[in-house]
Image (cartoon, rainbow, N blue to C red; front, side, top):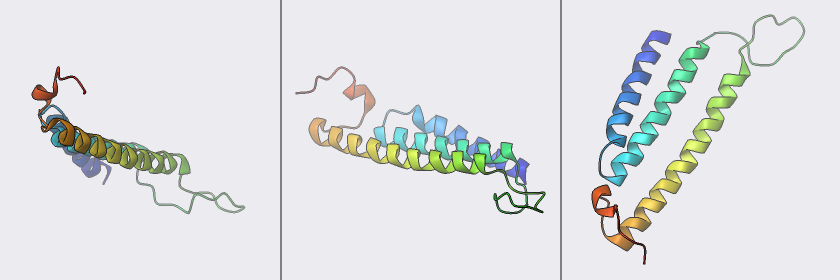
Length: 112
């Protein structure tokens, strides 16, 4: 199962990189979002999909799931959603003020 998740993560990172290198702002935002989700899957695959008890240490429990990767991925998901929302607001405001979302046209324009 880890191999399948690694392949899916690689595909997401590849598509995200391709979209992040485009000229349109929305494609760049979508590419960064896909890149982030691919990184989450990669972290999950690196940790391994272990089947064990809940991440609570009690007496008599010898196997439990490591909570650190789960906490890191959850924190990263929250931060990436917040950053995506910020990017979308900035892209919308840029489009309203300047009338374009093409990065080559945005390059070199001064803010009024």
